[in-house]
Length: 242
Image 1 (tube, rainbow, N blue to C red):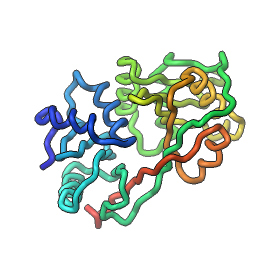
Image 2: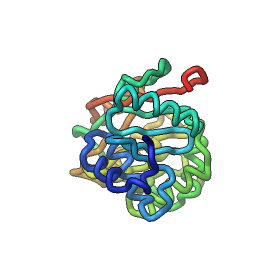
Image 3: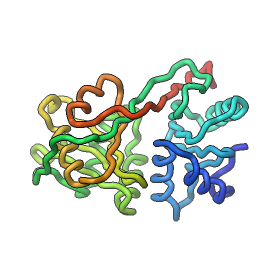
Image 4: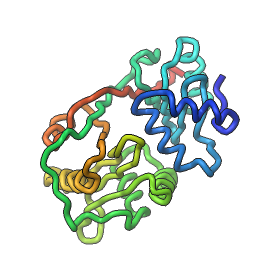
């Protein structure tokens, strides 16, 4: 039975400590940034934890066949259209593979051009413009909560006072997770994302640094010194699935 984390907090926190994997770390980071809040986005499902962000659901732990059916019913009720899960076993046909990459070494440089944590509002606007399906209010509160709780930093480059490339670095137990990496379309292929990422790596020297990317971006990150260490699966729930 799926229950809110607040109503089953002991099991929820135990799952965070005992379930291995990247998605556990991701949910834990968001949970810590909202621990004093409502916790309305977090759920406990036996030995698994769920995190709902808008219409997207992240699942840590491994579901049984019976739990998969209950999860899909939950998704239908909550209006979920995307599920992030670490296994290929969810009975949904439309699935995309995301590749987990870890920085394994290489040249990186910091630069004074990079702005850090200066304008969360503008960074939120920039991110919404570059990632389809993201709502400003949700993204802004997400970034602000993480930065204000010192669980993440935002980095970006500007051109004529406007952000043209940036990323967020979230702190996980075992290091740093890079996410929301993007560049304005007309400024792409100029090495700006590389500059931002290299600065983050330099500033967090000695930390494990990971990110997720699509298959076509693997060569780009490989050149930056990243190597593939795993996979996560994104399930798109069409009407016939829910």
